[in-house]
Length: 464
Image 1: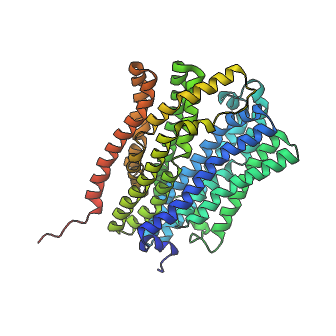
Image 2: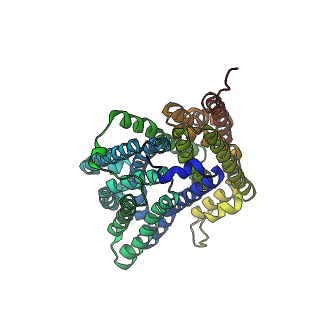
Image 3: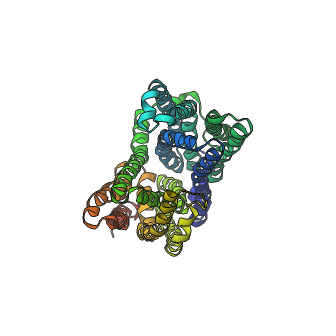
């Protein structure tokens, strides 16, 4: 069988490969994160604050669908990378076909359920009073685009599994640019209000889907499906579910964490501490994007070479990814340690006509965010090992350790810490929970990663 073009993952310099994979992934993650922020600014200026609240009500639904598509994508992409590395193109094709069918079944089911119980679901997410009607408009229209969003998120990870990070980056940029342009046309020019905001979002999903469909239909992709590849295979579906479950579980734990943090901080310091955490949460989302990009770029390299049984290259990819991610994490750490006040000020309104209550809240946030931010990011330089270690087990198809290590920081350490430490140390107990959880999770990951490398990746010496 002729070698597929993804063979560069097994032959090119690991350092160069990681840069080629990580830079587009980082840019894509950054652009998608910025989309939410800029979209909210446009909607708030052109429709009003109620519209922002309405969109915020629907965002958890969109995030869940995106996470579901990404879970199916990441779970299957791990199989695809290893199959291509083992020169088993047929298995890669069957996996991709199964991903398509699973995404179709899951997303259509969610659309039906979402439309049947729309009046019950929206209030549960906070869409009450004046927010209900605009939220229902936005929710209903966006829900029509759910299958498209699911396919877009799934397809993006498969593109990266083929070793085509630039195409994956473009696929992530298209919905961001498309959404902002369509916001301007539908809301500002055509004055369509909430309907315009919803159709702009759905239209951006469609633009992304069309690009991904073009990619897989063109000569750029190695995965050319035929009808036989769509038949669900129990073994493949099971592996996709187990590996993809890591992504879904991580998203669920993140949601629980935000829920707990908001309640604990409100009890300790009312709106002021909640606002402090909102800014720190934004920094957790944006500041670490290059580290997450290295992690995403590492996945197909490790998976392909593991499938090809090129274990020295797998070890090299682990070491190189940790070094690159640690360097970037350290730069983030230095910036946040030196400029926390300046960073905080970027998020606060400069309008002199704010009410006394709003001005007092701004002043509280400005003077109370620097110390918590330093605590939250205190262990940032070492998180590279934890992220790469957990990603390695996902890349090679070992779902259980991947799940446990992924959940270790927030699920096993952070959540218990924020439930216990504030009882003894008050507000400080909340913030010191972050670096303690980072250190504990990193130590656990280092142990299991080192054991796995010695057991699997170091070829035993022949007995004389």
